[in-house]
Image 1 (tube, rainbow, N blue to C red):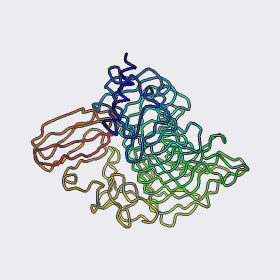
Image 2: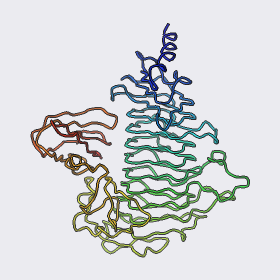
Image 3: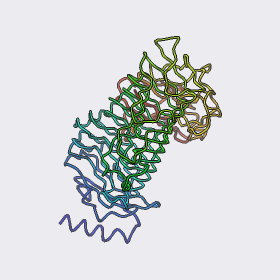
Image 4: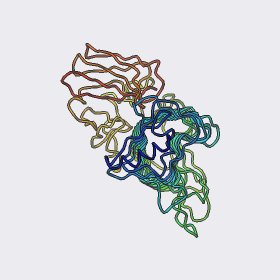
Amino acid sequence: MRNQAILLLFLILPFYANSRSITIGQKGDFYRLEEVNNLVSPGDTLLLLDEVYQDGTQFLENWHGSAEDPIVIKPASGTSVIFRGGTEALHLVSCSYLTLENLIVEQQTGNGINIDDGGNYDASTHHITVRNCVFRDMAADGNNDLLKLSGLENFLVENCSFTDGGEGGSGIDMVGCHQGVIQDNYFDRAGVTGIQAKGGTQSIRIQRNIIKDLGQRAVNLGGSTGLEYFRPPLANPIQDAFEAADLDVFSNLFIGSWSPVAYVGSIRVKVINNTIYHPANWVFRILQETTESGFLACSDNVFQNNLIILEHDLTEVNVGPDTDPQSFIIQNNFWYNESSANWSPILPVNDPGQLTGDPLLSDPENGNFQPALNSPVIGQGIGQDGPVTDFFGNAFLDPPSIGAIEGRDATTGREPSQDQAALRISPSIGQDYVQILLPLPQGTLQVVTINGQIIETRTVHSKDIRLDISSYPGGIYFVHWIAPHQSPSTVKFIKM
């Protein structure tokens, strides 16, 4: 009887609307997402009822929205939708124009979510958005990833949290992906690598992320891929091949990790205006793991306008065999070794604009990497080829400051409305507390997790609010301010 009712639903609904809201769950129109295979249409919204989904991998095959009417999968009420356990939570195969929002993915033994092209290189999976999702607590210790992407084109991953991944995997692993953006995310112990781009991956922007305490390479810009897995397939004979090319790594905060940056069989990669704090063993590596005939040496990459703060002496750059370090452009970086006053880094090529000394940041030990007003990094960067916005989404001036955060006040936020500008939070990255400045001493304040769960609501009667975040788990949070006769405002902060 249930199946007949579902069939009738799909026969009737198209006559009344171009798009449908379909509930998923024990009391929904369908019990599992994969039951909608071959039935879902552009513009449909799949609303997940608030429950824990733990009955194994759900395969979504050939789901195709459109540019005007994407398919959206999200919680019905905005909270408490958890995919727990199983080999994978979701496996998307040959899909397009699809958005995943506000999901929690945890305790999988394989990959958290897997999105691939089904081996069909001529009809890629494309235009996929993953937004405000939490990936955490993998139950795997091998080469398993929180988010696995293979053969994906034109994609966006933003405002997600990746924590406690598999010991041998990555937060985000890309094989043969192209034209993507990974921005405003939080990575903490997400695996041996935070973000990996290999297998012919090209034209990816990695910007404004916090990437913290990874086992080996915080960003692995290249890597080692079996030749049969490259997208597009390698030519025969192989000519001018690369693991990764044309990647932009802009305005990120790297905290800890064995090696924050690794160029591995990659070309034309730009690592510009990042802040690298207390790396454990190397600042960056230049390596070549794929050495078959026809592969280019790791070469023609850029390391520029980066602020590096060392806790102790280490080998700044590790150079491996079969690479071309002399082709790298290393320029206008600012170095500070907290353990040694008379010190300068040893680099494979000369940095003509190199600066050393104390960068005078506000309070980096407690997560505040804002340059002080008299910081020597202010205005010392090179403006060409770098990011437009800093870690907080504010405009870099010309010339920019060195590091991930613009040091001068004359910045323009990505949300420049008067109300948004009036709501401020400091520090934006904190451990114990954040200070919230309101435009008016009235209204309601809500603290919301990235998956939409309201964890605190308070009525305010002051313009200056001190918010204790010491008990919050590490990750991304939003503060919403709502007041009579005022436009609602939102600011973001990160708990370390």
